[in-house]
Length: 71
Ligand SMILES: [Zn+2]
Image 1 (cartoon, rainbow, N blue to C red):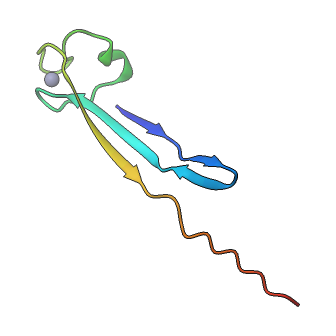
Image 2: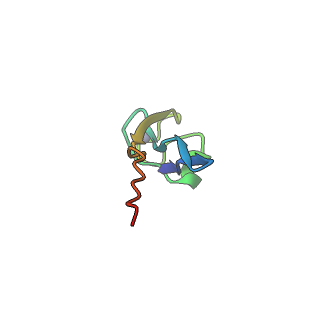
């Protein structure tokens, strides 16, 4: 499964990038559902469940250029 955490904004500034955490079986790499993560064994290979997490960080912040053209 993939848990997604959105970027956090404080006072209009992004202080934390959005992240994706992918949880799979460490033994076989099976992509577990939230229900299957609750179990003691992997639903796919039957091994004692050991989670492997990979974290992807999305750089959502762009340089904050606010250009105002006076008329
Ligand atoms: Zn497995």
